[in-house]
Amino acid sequence: MKSKVQFEIPDSPGDTMRAMIQLEPPIWVTTPLGEGHCLVLIDYGVSTNTVWLVHIFETGKVYHVDSSDIRVMGNAMYGIEHPDQPGKVNEKSNRSKARR
Image 1 (spheres, rainbow, N blue to C red):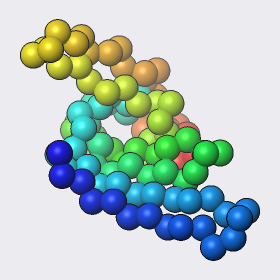
Image 2: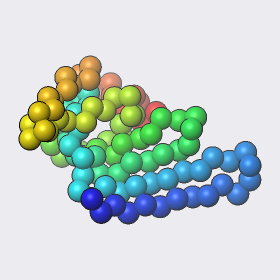
Image 3: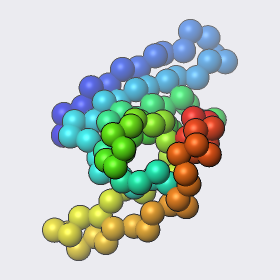
Image 4: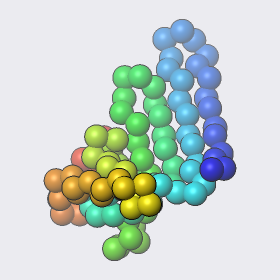
């Protein structure tokens, strides 16, 4: 796996470190909006959940999805079952939830 990583080191002790990781190849995931590929991970530090930038297959749209709403898909080659889709929501009601 070849990924590009960008870090922002805190200037002062009160700041948190942030990281952005471009995944190559992308990770196949399921979200409340449907299945898609995670293209980028954004980590804002220990006090905030990681944000997954996901391209949704069905609509072609890209969303920022909280890590608690992500399930990584299984792999039949290794006998890993696909997970159940997290609580499905409609697109309009998810806009505020997906951008926490």
